[in-house]
Amino acid sequence: MARLENSLYETLGIERESTQGEVKKAYRKLSLKYHPDKNTGKEAAKMFIEVTKAYKVLSDEKKRALYDGTGMTDVLLADLEDMSVEDHIRYCAQVFESREKLSMNDITAFFAQRDSETADGGVTSMEDEDIRAAYDEHDGDMKKVMRSVPGARAADLSRYVAHIDKLIASGDLQPTEKFQRTRPGGRPGPKRKGGRGPKRVGKESKK
Image (cartoon, rainbow, N blue to C red; front, side):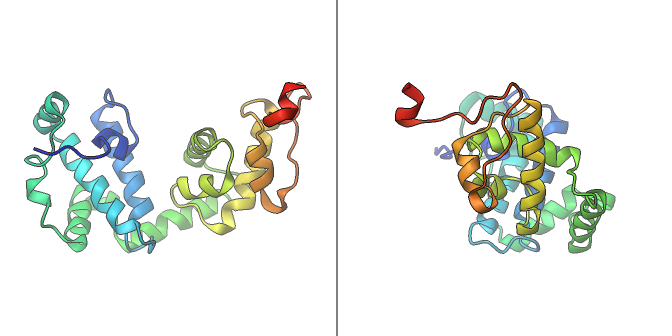
């Protein structure tokens, strides 16, 4: 029996100890990010299927226990192997029935509400959490941060950078060379609290 290259927990971006509520929350966030109605990227449909498969196992206590004990997935995912992208979309809609159903209208409404909440140039609490995690994971590389934050669009870049500047100024995030290089125009950002500049690499760091 085969094992997946990445664990199901890694696919959903959660820990093995995550609760069922956290499993569903992660699936909802990633479904929004990769839903074919919203994301037309080459890898989006593939990732949408992968996160659906991961949720299919981890949302079922018996299947999850068997997976935790063996790491095997082929039998557990047998009923999903022949499903098309459209089938996965229908399954996703069944999971998020009623007010949580991920129809095109609901996805549009989600972004409309987010845009309304951030009209002043700020970020939502969910964005703040995702931006911090992506910044740390990618060492401030804004190109990768924008690809990692669910629902991020090109128009959000300046808003996210402004938020990161505030976090750096308050000492909540550490400035990095990658952030300096990949922020719009490559302009230097603010120094972190305490007056020290971004961390440096190479020979300068040894002086």
